[in-house]
Image (cartoon, rainbow, N blue to C red; front, side, top):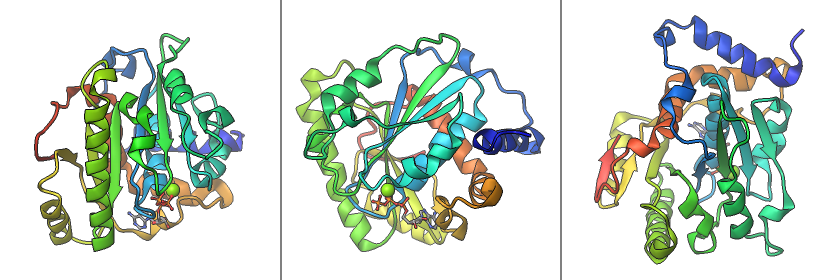
Length: 277
Ligand SMILES: Nc1ncnc2c1ncn2[C@@H]1O[C@H](COP(=O)(O)OP(=O)(O)OP(=O)(O)O)[C@@H](O)[C@H]1O
Ligand SMILES: [Mg+2]
């Protein structure tokens, strides 16, 4: 009997192996990666309800299930703890939910110094690649989150509603301002910003969203279409059916997103305009 906390990871790995789409042999992940420092990504947008936690769940479990020899830490910076509370049950040797009060200031804002130290700590197991996946709260202001400049990718999920688009535009401007202010403190170029169009209904809607953000210097990801399976992402039902269904349903998308995380250094910097991935 496989213990509950690793059952879902095991099941999904089996699924991957039995699906013809993914039957092509892949190089082991340790040979694809040159970096041994943890690779950190964040899902961030000041707008609430755009899918930050859902996508953080998909990235965290996706990295742990689809790529061998990886270790994933999920750090939830939201006091509501949607993702950390729900994902704790999947903790195993490859997936951890890290809760540490030192990551926060008394005000609830991120403790940038402690986060940056944690992100820069070498990983002791040389054969594994470590990933840190941050979920972040609505209302997050880039100016208070200098640790963002140490991430390898900043994912900005957004939906198509006017309120979401306006808030996302503002958030992207604030991110760029943070990057230019921190230029002198960064070792390399700023992290790529990848907009993730979420809850999309149709190709027309996707094109409309892309047109509204066309002036932005960022990457534009593949569409994640609206589906009720995402509504059940945080449900703890028997045999974790809801999460397993979600991972199966979204497997091509998760594969795309995790490959982007694995190879983010291959993205040119910066695009200078909206660049469709
Ligand atoms: N592609 C999708 N299709 C349908 N529903 C979705 C999709 N993505 C997310 N949702 C749903 O939208 C709601 C908001 O998602 P989520 O909690 O991930 O957003 P969030 O940005 O983390 O919100 P908050 O800012 O409140 O933390 C949830 O009910 C979630 O299930
Ligand atoms: Mg959330």
